[in-house]
Length: 145
Image (cartoon, rainbow, N blue to C red; front, side, top):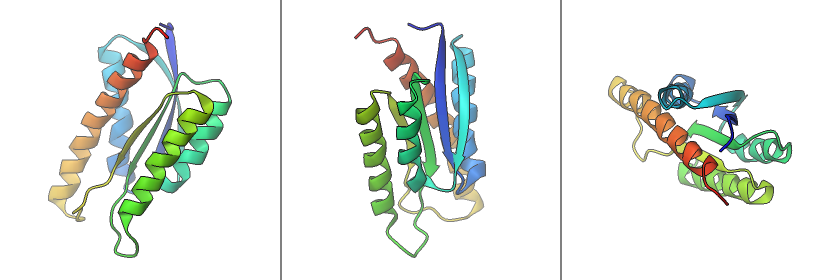
């Protein structure tokens, strides 16, 4: 177990108020767990740009983990399922190529509507997902392999 975890945190900028909750939940859970963490934050235009950045960050050897957060919604122009699949596959490929654990908090709701009810639900949900990512990062970091 390392003393301080060095984490790269990538955030897509579509629905930034919701996606930013992930980082807040992550930081709060790390603090509550008493775990020291150094977080470098990277903003990208959208989810599609996350895998390449994750790979480049992993190749630096500076990070114990990479977390990528995005909300991929159906904008009515293309199928968001295809984008979400490409992103998650790309993040897995980056992890396998670099050996740096890469965690996806990329959610793809099937029926997201830009309404107060949906906004509030996902705003709160991303806070929870950030905390879950922190737990996963600690668990993987503490593995003895």
